[in-house]
Image 1 (cartoon, rainbow, N blue to C red):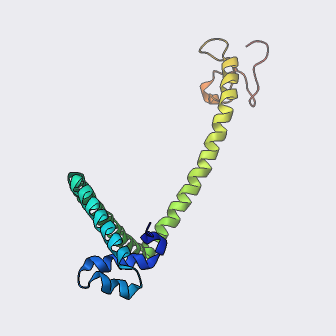
Image 2 (cartoon, helix red, strand yellow):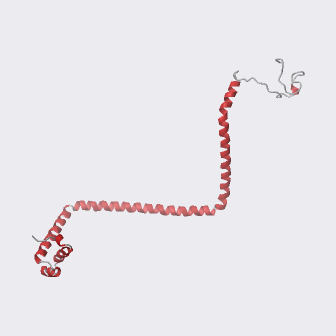
Image 3 (cartoon, helix red, strand yellow):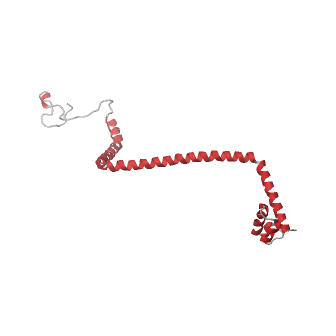
Length: 186
């Protein structure tokens, strides 16, 4: 049995293509590589048979290869469009960034006082919010106490001294001096 091209290594990979090329005889190729002409004939036959088998396989599957190439072209076209869209977004974002930086630089003197005022207003609002939170936290107990004191329905029993000016009071109506609650059930 003759050695295979694989057994002889890289030399065989050069011999068979040189023999198939057709510009020299098999004996000339054999002399150049130091290989017996019979081996060259065998390798040449194997190479041509493999090429023939490969060509047949490619011919049998040409419609699949054609579909694959068409689909590949569609995919590449879509990838190209998306790449262009992303590029456009990047360019637009870069331009917007440049314009915003310029806007901030141009208006720094005008914006700085406004931002400081806004910060003061925010601080005031936060303080007011804290006061409102405190008021709401005590509103519940206050409402309960007022409700307890209004046991007579809509009316509340109480005495408020000094609400009516003295000249509106009939003579001898207590209190004659100062603000004291009436005594003796009057």
